[in-house]
Image 1: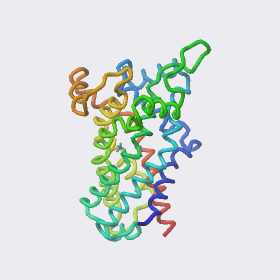
Image 2: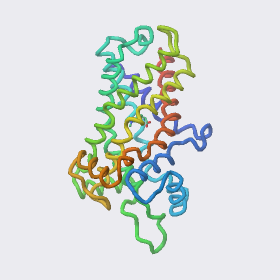
Image 3: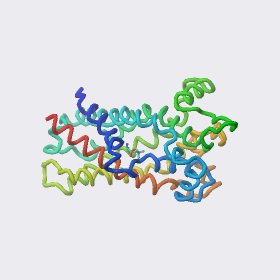
Length: 296
Ligand SMILES: C[N+](C)(C)CCCC[C@H](N)C(=O)O
């Protein structure tokens, strides 16, 4: 099993976060917290309102809540996604990454490989994502003398508390919704990327850097656009049992959210998810392709 795809996925997942001087405010972290809060809480009127309130109550640090853990986990998860995707394509089409532009696989194969990568990565992502969502939903201001301490003191404390309260399986709360979100949408992710690259590149040639950036960015937007309804459900299921109500399952969560808040609930966080998806995925694909081609 070729491992360079896993390594390239590992590095490319992280690159975006190491470019703060190039994209000072483009780091995806603030956007991420707004998305999660808009989806799970009903006190915000929109992105701007959520940002203003977060800043007022929690200062700038509020925007970075729950992010140290995901940054560490992004490398692992991206490595699993790209590694499993590429090795599944290898199994289906008997072409290695280097041969793939010259002998392009069918879109069906790309879709199946993307779904497989998405399915496997969802289970690696589940505990990290749960901890992120739980920490991001803590709206208490930073600890002040005399004020009650927040429920979770940090990622490790959060993980330990969940294990203590719900057992180790508690870390996989919402994992099924996450799998439903990621399996088809990562198929769409790779199909969009391949399709856009092939549209703007002469037959059987490697795409240029600009093409990879644009195709990667739009692949991110397309997959987030389709994933947003299930992203809302996933975040709500992960918060179940805390201040929020417990749902009997994915369907129950969908029906009762729609009944109480209207169909618009499924599009909460869509704008912010798409805005962060473009730069993150443009850089991810560019780094991935660059690394694999330079390793020959
Ligand atoms: C499947 N889903 C849409 C959820 C994510 C697809 C893109 C993955 C990328 N690491 C990102 O964070 O944007």
